[in-house]
Amino acid sequence: MGITLLDTLKNFIDFINPEGAKSKEIKENINRSHIDAANIYCRNINELSAQFNIEQAYKVEIHAYNADKKEENYHLHLQKYTNLSHLKKAFLNGMGELHLLDLEEKIKILPSTYIFNEHNIKYKAIETRKLVPDFLYTLDDEEYCVTLKPIHTATSKKELQYELQNLYKTLYLSLNKEIDIDSNFQTSTCYESKHILRYFRLNQNSLFLVVEDLKGNMHHHTFKNINEIKHGLSGGGTQLKFWIYMYGDTYRFYLPYDEKAFKTSQVPLDQEIFKMTI
Image (cartoon, rainbow, N blue to C red; front, side):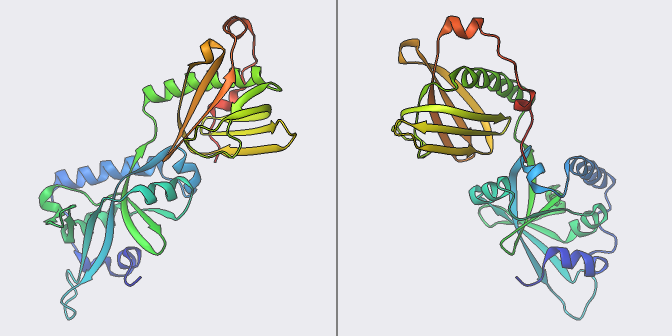
């Protein structure tokens, strides 16, 4: 892996740029960004990834110059990383490690940082007013400076809570009844068949189902990293079709629906549906 950013910051930070970013405005921006990052940071990546995902990533390279000189001996190159798919999926699945970079380290290293965009054009970070991202994500012996973004906005969270209540009530009323589902639990297929819903457990970001096929075989599956749920009428109004959206995956199933029974039935709402599983 060579020289890592964490090792460089730990052992050579005073040689990178003793004075660091001098501009009061830049320091204030770095400090403000660091406070926001510190407020959400936790060492349990599963807990963090339940609420946030990677928004941008930069591949990290440490370049050593002027071996006989101590000052500015190390330059940080941040290459814009455009293929985020596997990083996001790994992060959501709790893989890798996330570190919050030290505030003073970010101030010192900024003047020696160069950012390369997706066209490999090089810019000095301090001249473009870009900051060193607050987080360092390590995965498979590679380092990435990353920014995080909340999975939900205030609006999308309310929409999800509404859909969670609909799904919970429909699942509750469907227990021990026939539903249409693909018990191979393949994503985005059109091969649903009759099963009996025997058990379910629903949380804000996961759904566990146990179903029995018509031959008496039991099947179970946990849908993880749910970020959106949608539903609509199907089967001439006798079913509700639910779509479960996860990062990179979509799944659907059909539950029995009777409008009058649905509206008049009093179902005790489990508050666990609004909590996230880690």
